[in-house]
Image (cartoon, rainbow, N blue to C red; front, side, top):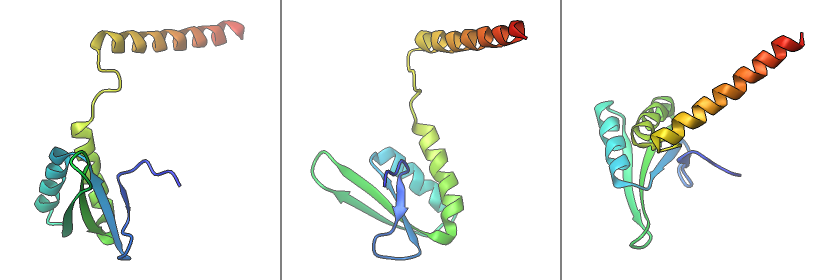
Length: 111
């Protein structure tokens, strides 16, 4: 099954989820938030080779709801804009709003 989140059930320990990060900075921020909230976790670094390092956190399922919120905070802090160029972003937004206005005007004039 296709999974777009960065967490799964622990493969060997029922009752635990594993949150996986691929960047040291994100993992450090997540770890700091977990410590700040006094949430128990297990931490592991998996170095497959020099190019890929996985930072993994084992979290109890009982803390899942709060940890998912912390995960959103970390991912939101480090995410890049979908359209990074400011002028292209404004053009796309203006174009979309223009199309939407044309559709609304067309619907109004048709009735």
